[in-house]
Image (cartoon, rainbow, N blue to C red; front, side, top):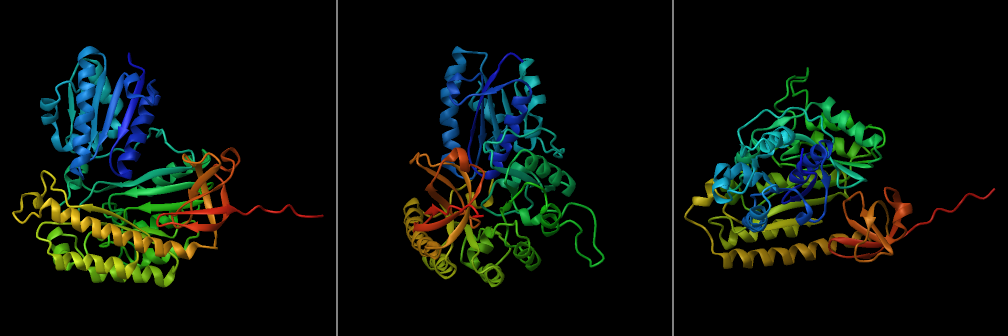
Length: 451
């Protein structure tokens, strides 16, 4: 290898961030060094997202600047990975001929091999479907406290607005043994929390063999939670993202029963109207979604619920949008990621004639966000005066006297403390102030026993 410094910019979801960590681990292993400043790097990698058009356009803006730099420095290596790479393929090379490597998400584990081809003077496009081999590389994790562990790649859903199945491929579940082995490794390295990742994580195991005597699949996500729950060193388990189609009562009972599983559930609903859900091809009704939330709160009354929602889907009427507002009002989410519908190339809904104007979408998004903030603030009130256990992750970048971490319910919490002493610790904190999406508290100091 002749180049030794790299910089990775990641756009999009947790899956992309986890992929970036794996690719950074590969680059570290073959002798590269990470740098914060892209203009000091010999290798630039953009790990891209196609879910929203603005993220895609930002990639092209960044690429334009680096392409000009490469014209002056031909030894610079330019790579586009992720979903834009998968979607555009060779078309990216025509648009940005300075690129050296275009690689889809399924090829993240092959970065080292693909780089060898690049350094031999080849311009490489790797977007063909592949079976994802078990990754034996060590991710270069951005955090020293929390780690992402992929459990299932790809997606078999065919939502009419979504590019994910086309860019991430079909579902491929890792074996329970491989997942546990990675968790044991991060536990030995001192990580306290693991987030299990999948595009539809509760669909885990559908592609794995085995049927139980009771007639159900031998490897479900519920079974996986039981299998990995006792990994030594791991204090907390989270998971994302859940699909309402596969969220079962058995999974809910397991989450209530297993003490390390955080009582926070991210279950996107996308719309509160059944006709819109049908057009989206989501495979459930708003009534089924509400029943899932009711069952969670029956057994875990204090559970935090977050979700995703899209407004302005093609053909959505004002009445249908108001059904989304009603669902948000009724459920009261702790957090809701909202977006105006964005037509994505290669998706069914992008070519429908009943597209809504940007003005209508913007208006509905503002109205939804206003309600979300009100409901989140109301949900936060329940924390006031309570004692919460917070896993300290880092220093508050806006106040050097404070540290920050998250409660079991995933509320970001700030309190005064020394990061050198508290980082990675589970700390009891009395909540003194609440906001819509964060809390402030005071550390409870344990008194030394008297003899």
